[in-house]
Image (cartoon, rainbow, N blue to C red; front, side, top):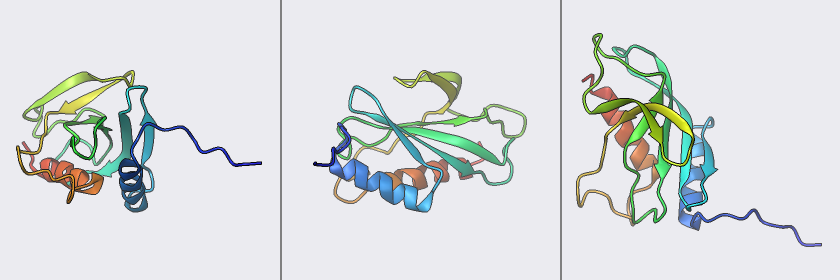
Length: 136
């Protein structure tokens, strides 16, 4: 009897990069969508100054990854800094295909700064961390 492998639309690179992310962030889980994209979810500690010390951080691993980089991320609970909503964010923004709403941070790699040959999901997570280190 042969062992059946799970059916996935994710590329081997996406799966390997997620396993590397999970090795550093054991809380990470990946939920695939019918479109071929997936939602990565993990616990994330915040620097001092935010209205919470820890959030659930979510981002989409897009169909086309790693050529197409992740774009934006969501956190729950909603965050404030200095009593106000952070710059370039939207409250209760629906995560495409996930059926979940969360606090969306509009955050992107500048054109030309993402390389499918060099960057991975850990690169993206470090980028999210850089944004969250900016208390604005």
